[in-house]
Image (tube, rainbow, N blue to C red; front, top):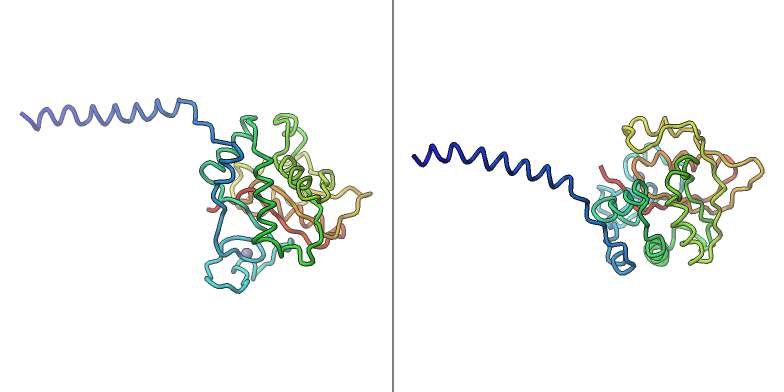
Length: 246
Ligand SMILES: [Zn+2]
């Protein structure tokens, strides 16, 4: 008797549970807390970064030893660092700003970047000279659709708060490429190769802080750095708000 009732009700509860979880997907996502106080609590991405690409090195050492990938094939930039892991509330804030036109806490995030340059990142520009902040440009159509370029938004606040020069027009982006987001890792480098250039009448400053929102494979940072170095760039430090870790 009991086993017959069990046989009838267990599938019912299983089915109801699955249907309820589908309904949950339809509910609006909770908005991330973007207040300055909340951003101050966002957990900084910590670890033992590779001195070149900034990825977490498997080697536990206080010495700045490059990771295996950088040792085999050094990147065209001098260093890369990311403030947060691209996960949880940070990822939600970035995605909702990029794809749902929600506001992004550019000021508080720029404050966190400034704090990092006063702390663990203070030696990235060796002589302490002010770098020029150059945001990775977005394609014009994307800019019109979104109404902003997130790296430029954060870069402007970082530069004004630090007294550093800001040059959002130093790099130009080819319009004909597919968006990087959604492309498989193997295709990202090929898609972005040669996509950036420095206008012929521009001079690249000796120290550039290249700012982007997310570091995924490093393909965009590398393509920008190649364009900057080819046009006389000196020290290039790539800084991203977040890093996607596979
Ligand atoms: Zn590395």
